[in-house]
Amino acid sequence: MNITRKLPDDIVSKTSKYFKIGKIIKDNSGLPYLFIKDLSLGLYEFEKKEVTAYEFG
Image (tube, rainbow, N blue to C red; front, side):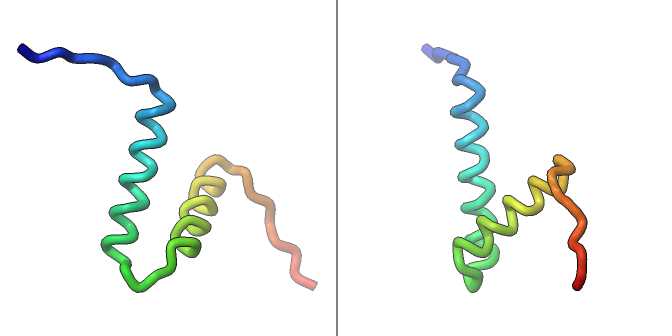
């Protein structure tokens, strides 16, 4: 007998983020974890338009 339960959205979201980072680490094993984490955070902020233009000088 199968039982289906809906997990809370926050748990699903966190789990999918960990799997996504794990896949990136597996595919790019030469890159340090912190670099991948910071890059992922930067891409997320860029997609959400939470960035500002860099002013040179």
